[in-house]
Amino acid sequence: MSWFESFVLGLVQGLTEFLPISSSAHLRLTAAFAGWHDPGAAFTAITQIGTEAAVLIYFRKDIVRIVSAWFRSLTNRSMRGDHDAQMGWLVIVGSIPIGVLGVTFKDQIEGPFRDLRLIATTLIVMGIVLGIADRLAARDEAGGRHRAAKERKTLKELGVKDGLIFGFCQAMALIPGVSRSGATISGGLLMGYTREAAARYSFLLAIPAVLASGVFELKDAGEGHVSWGPTIFATFIAFGVGYAVIAWFMKFITTKSFMPFVIYRIILGILLFALVGAGVLSPHAGESAG
Image (cartoon, rainbow, N blue to C red; front, side):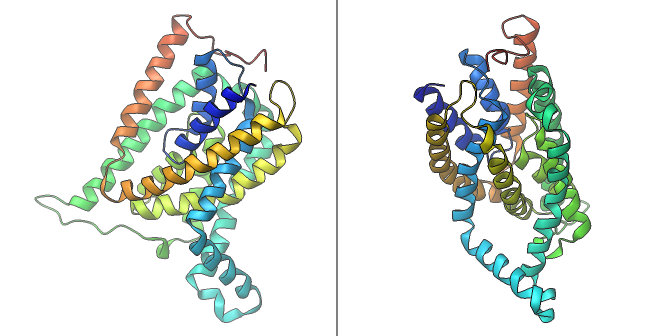
């Protein structure tokens, strides 16, 4: 991998990690369209450490408060009813599905799941799911002629059951094209949470999963055509760009619809199917050389 490739892929990772359009799919597609080798699951996982570092800094006050309350609740029974302490446990509970499924399907994640036809399918299907979830949320918020606006749930109402459902939604993002934020935010909206609550828990929930995945994949960094230098460079690029994107996205979702992302996903999925069907792209473009 050249330094230019690592710059572009780090930029793509930072731009797409927090948007509901799938960063892993865009890394895969960028390489395929450019005629580069597939950067691989290890490169993706490690560069995601950069974007998660952006989450740690952006949500630093929330994280410090949650971690502090959680540790105090281990020895102080009176703290166990504290919302922040409960959030600590809920992040742990919600991380279980992706941990178990990530280890179980590791070979599939690094192989068959990177087929461009599967990515096209997940882009379209999850785009439709996000669109439905967004419309339901908008209907609740706006009300109508014959119904009052419906109040949606906040994170104070999050329990173990919903935490696990969020966790299983996040685990779906092991398949490129699904999108970690897209799946968890869609799940949250379908369960009746506000856009801000679903997005905030989605980002907090991703921290242990992404950091653990990145550390786990460190042993595979530097193998094949991807060396340590470009990987680290891409990770730093992803961090800087990712921080700017998350700050913008958290403001965007408070007033805007997810429909632009829905339309983008569906169009990209259809285009990808057309290119593969016409023989312009191989479903496994770049994989053989990786």
